[in-house]
Length: 482
Image 1 (cartoon, rainbow, N blue to C red):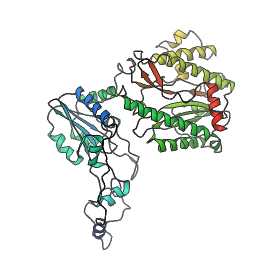
Image 2: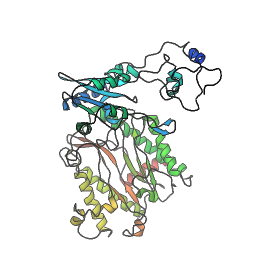
Image 3: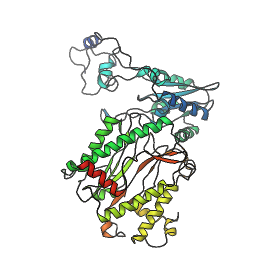
Image 4: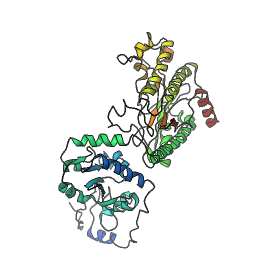
């Protein structure tokens, strides 16, 4: 029911919630006046624009004569009328550089390729009452967005997303859609077998990183290094919290990620003591105690959305115990063996296999496993996985587990290529209740993870600034804590 004496403006419910008051016509009229001219938001093309254009050309070449539709996705509701912070769809961003929600890239076939158009929403500026009534998109609620001005910044033709439905309806010929991101787009174009091939092709095109991408990854890693330094400096304060010290460390790193990048690239893992034996411990509801290890798996997502993924396992009191160092050194040696296998042409799984040989030898030496190493390492057995659990490497880029739709024969069972960015992260995890493990090892989890780019003659360790050898870790921590 309208409030007495109010004549609400038309469509005022768009972008509003239950507790918002109705908008009298007099207020709408008053709000429409007395504003300075709308200021343009975009300058010239961004430095990344030529790289995005080249990527669109590579996708165009893969599907000549076909329509290609790549949405970014919509805001996701967190609870009731609040949304999660919007993060563009990975493939869409890779092709456009646009951060706007609800946008859709369309590549329309032409005689010699495709014509690219970015369908996006115009600004909700002072020209419509929505600028102050729409809490999801109005500029007084969320700030200005680029809208159609994105054309100047991104170097791509822009059109009103309201026109997209008609364009898709009139599109003749084969149409491929990247599905699962925008239900409206999915409904507008009938599903086709070729849609899955589009998703696969995009992942495989993204396997080799261009120069701009590697630079952005290095930025993310450099900020992550500083975030780890912050985390070590915060250990003393974190010990004060009986139950949530891990979250103090998590929050410390998050501050660095938000200041120097866009966000964290994934939920930070701050796992102290036996929590380190839970691979994806993101609850971070635990104490930080002297004598325990802290497994920190964290990464800054850069302003252009490329994420680092780095892990260090640190002694909270600054010194590894004899047993902790025994486990840690085994993992460190495994990582060094894995590094030696990273080069163009090598099997993607070669670093994993090399690391497992080192870890199995150590497990046999400690009597945790018995038998012949070859039998334990055999593909039909893999008994070592009780204590290692995961693979050593994955692709890294705009997603922390990048290029996930690539075919197995190209990715996991294919060769490494120059320009691939991968992690190398062996680990050992001895569950607190595992009776196959000597008691003194139970509850210890160790992972060491670095981010590498494959080069013409081997690799470059993007995260080499963070030490990994045990004595160097102790010296690094001592310097920060002094």
